[in-house]
Length: 358
Image (cartoon, rainbow, N blue to C red; front, top):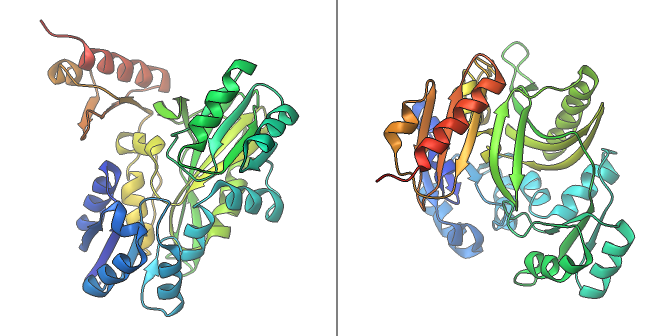
């Protein structure tokens, strides 16, 4: 395979994990910071300087118009595609594509850009309801309104620096899951095909991931519906790579919530649970290499948003691992013979890691 190069648009701990996966396959990786990724002229200059074979946006808000021009000219491969990146920049375009164009079931929703329409949407959808920025924000600005006294704060939280706002009806669902759909070239046919990882369950609070585990239990009908939904939305976005499709599950019914066209923090559990992690799979898929989504062990992951005081105690928990990142953020991974045991070990290691010493 000839030498290839990739330019990541945006940085962070997950970009670092992905860069390692690409470098293991002989790909030279360079990274543009978040500001350069958003600036059209700065982005053009970077691309002219490095001449990458692949461009991988690692954040939603990039200069998509530049990517579309380069892709149309055949100068570079945008992952998953310029069209896919454009669709996933804002919740309104993605939700309308999923719901209106593809017919995927979703919860009731409204998009608003002023306070009067916001109040009307909250009244129409009823309480409780969920309020989010209309642009994707990695969970920031999410609020569940449960009472009238929380409306003002929810508006201010989601509105931020002038964002449009999404109001979504709260669904009394059984679980929230993420399903990884992996699009690559099937070596048997030479054509694009889709593979699925085992579904991942997770718990979030105030827009932040607390815990995830794999696999999570679904009925056969729900699993079929989830895979069909993931295949349809990833096909609509186009290109190759990992697509993290977020869904709500209620019995056999599955509702589309969102999709991230790259590795997702929810799926970091795959670092220990699968033969190839989401980062390895993304690199393989982008390069058109064979895909293997084998689950090797039930696994769990907890996120820590404070200092790790006792790394040794955390690592003493059987089958536990800890990844330390910048800004006092850490991740605890654990495996076991069952999901429940893996979650218990991850919780035990997290408690040990954050316990005060002295």
